[in-house]
Length: 107
Image 1 (tube, rainbow, N blue to C red):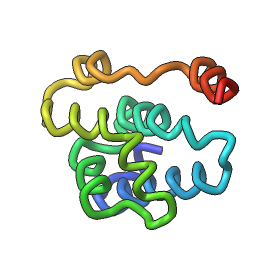
Image 2: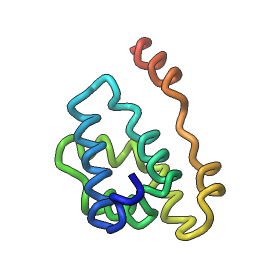
Image 3: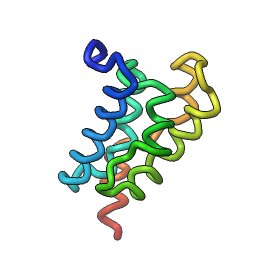
Image 4: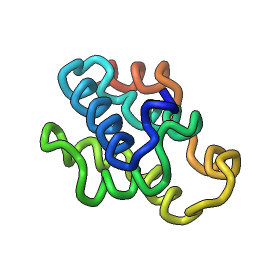
């Protein structure tokens, strides 16, 4: 996907596509932060794209939920700026999907 996300506009569009998909497929809604992390770690999206998306570019569909869910990654992106990807990856590690799924059953 990296060759297709060379512009900031394309990166924000990719984040919005993931957001809308997670919104429509409610069984994976909690995986959104992990999806962002993978896209970020694979250099498909940048710090700036994540920050812009959270501040101005998020799709209206579930915007509050998704921005709040991604808040830790947004904070780390803001803090680290252009430092190397490995240190940012260690700073934000969302829980595995199995933990998310088990916490949903308790509710």
